Image (cartoon, rainbow, N blue to C red; front, top):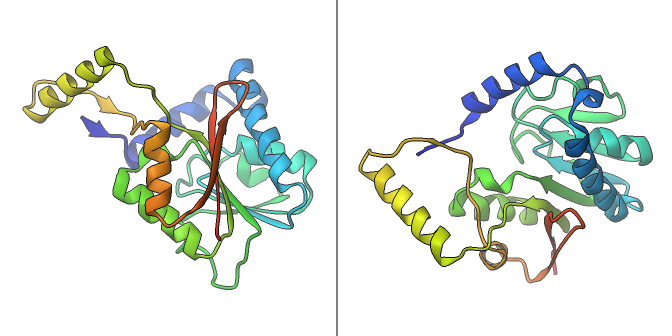
Length: 214
C-alpha cells in the first residue's frame, strides 16, 4: 500500500475547493461533528491566553473557535493548498510549515492541540512528534480525533492478509493512514515521556487524549 503523502493531499484539496466554496457549503453532518470537537477544545482553552493548533487542515475548527474565543490562536499547516479559507480569518495567525521548525524560539503557548492528524504518522514519527511538543515546551496538550480501532479476530486476519499481499505486490490500494488501539496510543504517549495522561470519548464517538508535563 502507498501511504497518502503531501502530493496526495495537495491534489485532494485542489479538488475539494472546486466542489466547495465556503465552510457553510460543507455537509451538515460533517460540520456538526467538527462543531462538537470545537466546543470540546473551547472548554479546555477558554481561560488560556495563547494556543497552538498543529496541523489545522482546512481550518474549520479554528474558524469555529475564533467565533467564541478572543485570545491568540496560532495555526500551523504544512499545506498551503488546504489553508485557502483560513487565510481570510484575520483573528487567526496562520503559519505554513512544520512544527516546531516554523516557529520562533520566543513563541510560548499555554496549550496546544492536534485534530485528526495522528493517522499520518508511523510509530517512530508519532513518538518524535509528541517528544517535540513536550520538549518545546508545551505543558498541556490535547490530541482529539485519535484514529482508534477495536480489533477482532476476523478484522485482524483480513489486515494481515492485505499486508502480506501488498508486500508481495499482489494488493495495491491507497493507504489513508495508521489506526491504533487506545492502549497503543497511550503506550506511544508514555514512550514520548508523558506520565500525566487522560483519555475519553465524545458523544459522537471521537476519542481524545490529553497529556501534561509533570
